[in-house]
Length: 153
Picture 1 (cartoon, rainbow, N blue to C red):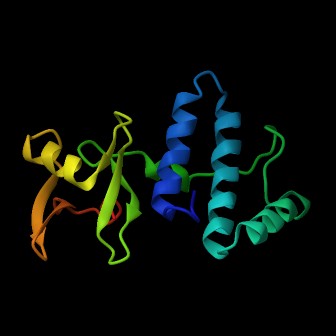
Picture 2 (picture 1 turned 90 degrees about the horizontal axis):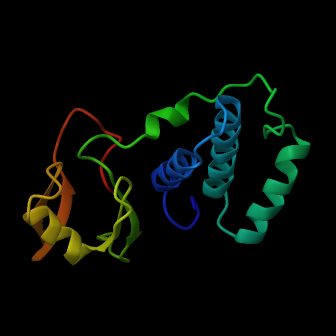
């Protein structure tokens, strides 16, 4: 996910995956968050999938992964990736020029192209976002607030 999309999208989608795994213990959730973080770290470190596979095969040998729920290491940073109210959109794809083109709503599960997201913002469905005209094109942008970690892209 981190290679194909972006680090923040990978974190949020990993968190969402843990959210839907109802019934797992806190230790299992911690193990999954920890291991997701290791995967994201390596996904951002290298560009090729074969190299990523090599690094991930080495991770358990190097003791980087949690493989037993009795492991006492705790992952805390991942909890910060929970979607904020009205700031639940993640960009999954950008154009070559850097314009955000494909969006995912972490709370509803909606996948939207830019035009559909623009229409949803204009209809009032996403109050945490606004539409700007950038180089003549309607473009979704996050409304300003005090957080630097909740911009869609």
